[in-house]
Image (tube, rainbow, N blue to C red):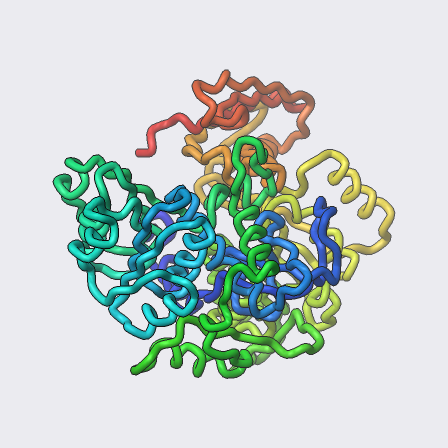
Length: 553
């Protein structure tokens, strides 16, 4: 990165990562304020529970994909429903273990997940043994229905309880760096039993521990099938129920149904509820000495939601300068646009940062000394103090945001591409044709401003024959730029080179021809490898060879 972008920009990116901190929380419950396009089964005002470390944060307002959101059944409180993620994790571990009626299972680690797991096993008609170093946790699990608890791993005792056979299965819900827990689990298991890892423990496996008894070892992935699959979680493409019975969404719903039927008890697992203003005290309670609670809740007051905040300790710059808002605070904005604006502080002041994540907006505003952070770009466009905006969002938002900004009287620097369709382009053209006085709109095609390109251009006279080879590198098919929101690599990236051709020739395009290769495998998109030839009015011909198959070196 230092070689490609220089020390200063790299330093800015690193500092931004370090200063932004981490968003906490991955399980929440609340009321729907808005519903996204394509969501037809949920409505504003519905009570829902949400999961996801990327979205179900500790915040008053969160944006969560449909497949990570489930309705809360009647009779289930927000407090209980807010544990939905933990319930789904424990339930997926159980499904991986596939317990049957009458089997004996050992649960190692009786924290929140372990307590839920013991109750789920009892509902499945199993004999359940729990192991935890904390006697308070084994006592609690026994009160909630577990058959017997131990404060250490005792292979002989488990053997006695199972008439010398050993446990049919072991589910590990502990968190420890020790490698002994996994070895203990294998020792507790009978021949051809199974061990399921739900927690996070050391995994220095010894072949002899499980080979001779032919033990099955399973990893349970978070909330269930669909987790970490962007097509499922972000694009809302569900797995067909006849083939994947229990997705993460269906696990979440099943857990809430058990709460509604009062078949699972969690009141004893939640120590107390703290208002969000006392979050620090809540975390201290979890980490303090003595008896540690299994869980606490953070609650939020009912009040009007604000999408914009003013950041503290602002140092205003003197003199006349252009007030700029940056809409979209991703890696490119923080690595390029914002450092560039800072280096031109005698001409520009960064007035506002807008991001779909309130945490990211606030952290970026603090890093670049902007007085305003917001998640609502419309509020920023209505601010009369802002002269211009830089739009660096995902591609499908470019045209709409640019038009909104122009209509609000703001000059616009818009990252490429300008738009994703001819219909969107016609809207922009119509706006300029019908408006007598408009702000400036510039698409961020930066290749033409490169000093080497400008030097080359000074030595050229048309008509030209141009060959440009772009080794763009591989991007997976499920990456956002390959989806509808990105428009594909031709529109989303190759457009840089088409602009460069028009700059070098100083002529209008008369004809375009393009051919792509048949992808060698399904991992490549049809627009990953192609040749585009452009003919110009002055007789110039330019060819772009765009490939993702080139050497990474």
